[in-house]
Amino acid sequence: MSEHKRDVHGHTVSGEDDALNGINYLDHHLDYQEAEVFFDQAKRNGAAQFEDDKKKNYTIIRNQDATYTVERRKESGGWF
Image (cartoon, rainbow, N blue to C red):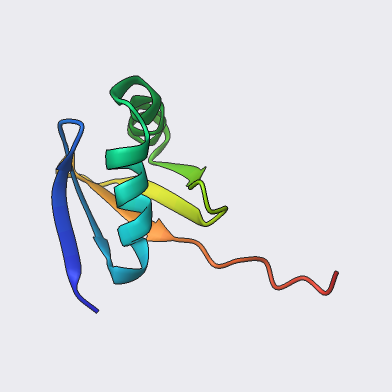
């Protein structure tokens, strides 16, 4: 897997291949104010969860150097 890194609404964001759609969602599908909600929550709480328009789940994590990492969360493997 390769790591992707880019500027998203003024924040340095990185993530592996499986998180690329989540990074693209923050960057291209949300405007600044909508995306900033997730960055603010991650800044205050260390992480924030979000879902893209295809119902895929991601977590944005604030790193100690004030950059952010997006990780894809696994879908629930429930029996129902």
